[in-house]
Image (tube, rainbow, N blue to C red):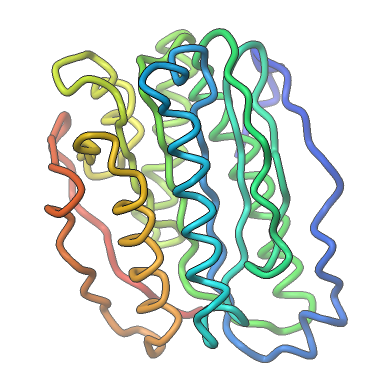
Length: 256
């Protein structure tokens, strides 16, 4: 959980999900909650990264909406970070209700501060599932960034410990994706937050291919049985893996 210490960057949070408890109870499908944390620092304006990312997010939403099983089981949340704040752009919504926000680039890269509100809002959502007896697959947290963390190593370490614990206990699947230059140091930050120490480098800003892969992966998760290990498609079509820290990989799907 987030520390009691006030974060260096404030967090803006909208109203909780409009999906009511009654709606949750009336839909018996096991849920797959997904949080996508997106970099909105000023450098995301380079090479149209921010615009391409929004296009990719819309493809992701649309493909999930068009899949009959994923449409009823997937819930999406988007958190942005950049400038002087991390912001929960939209709480968990079904693909048909979600509207991809108009993202704006500004300032620094408070990556670590995006992790804590993402984790908090996820825990709140899981509590809602428990209230109405709705089961869920292991949640996904997708971290997308193009530059190195602008906060202290202490903040980064705290966020990394949180994600490592959640992953080791099989409570969360974490995917870190770099959209910056392959030779730059952002791998040290994203790699530290990655429980298995791996960062996926997005080749040629292929956001559409990445989000297409992510959509297919989520659809496979939504069709899996409780305790079943899901084999996802190779990522070579859109990226390459770089290992920064050697850690144990935890990448299974499980309904709880």
